[in-house]
Amino acid sequence: MGPGDVDASGRQRPPLVERALAAAAEAGFADSCSDGTGRLLRVLARRCARAGEIGTGCGVGSAWILAGLAPGGSLVTIERDESLVARVRRVLADQPAVRVRRGDWRRLLDEPPFDLLFADVSDARDHGEDVLRAVAPGGLVVLDDLAPHGDTDSEPVRAYWLSHPDVAVAEVAVSPAEAVMVAARLP
Image (cartoon, rainbow, N blue to C red; front, side, top):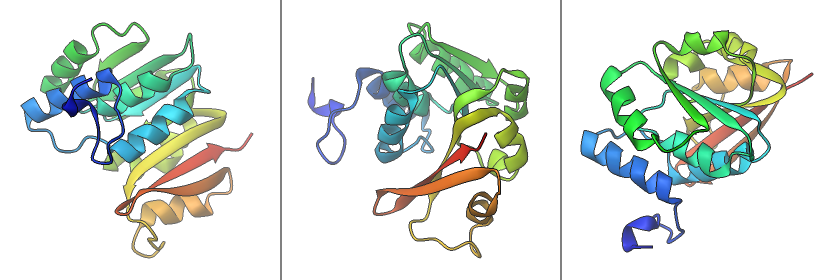
């Protein structure tokens, strides 16, 4: 592995993640998930038969999920920006476990329920009930880009998930500047 294959802390990234990061840099796309979030996604994906992602971007989150996906598992990811969809399809072309869809994230609601759903766009965050409907009982929703030690008054997304009666939630600090919520849909 070369020097570009490690993150800021010196930990190695999977080669597919490196490819997606290169595509994001080439496109000038700065909204990819962080390495901390990616590492968490990789761990959570290990228990999944079906994973979903809302907001593909250039495929960085997808690459992290694919790096951990259980054998025989699959990933469906959706992105509304046509130019990003074309780019990510090239990045993930050799990955048979993934299907990249173009369109509004709500189109994922016509898919069978997911064991893991990475909701990485603000519009989906504002429609928690719809996001939750896309997850199987016992499945997980991951929300990133939250301020660590945030409060429910300043972050309505946090308030919604922490108070929802049908989920169990944990917040994980993935860096000094970022927290991630993992919500498990109760059976």
